Image (cartoon, rainbow, N blue to C red):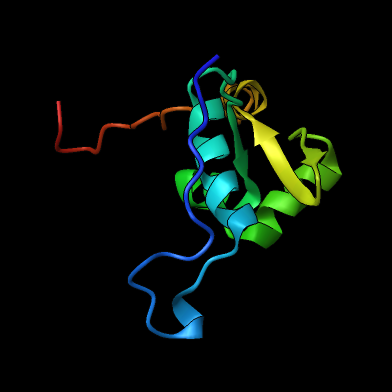
Length: 108
């Protein structure tokens, strides 16, 4: 497991109280970056990310979820859509059939 390095609670060059960070936030930042290398990536997107990717407003995404055509789950307080569920939703979209073209009188 990678070593975590601790930084001072208050940076040396912080001149105003607004620039100071707590010891917890400094340590958590290092912890997050260390865990990122060993964590299994979660392939999920938020409602907003899904809507942006598939050109839908968030209300339309929720309509698809309520209708049962799209599966979503909660992680903490966020509603997310797993990549597999998004791909399944796209695969089940109705296909447009090509229009049959009738020849006009002058065409042959």
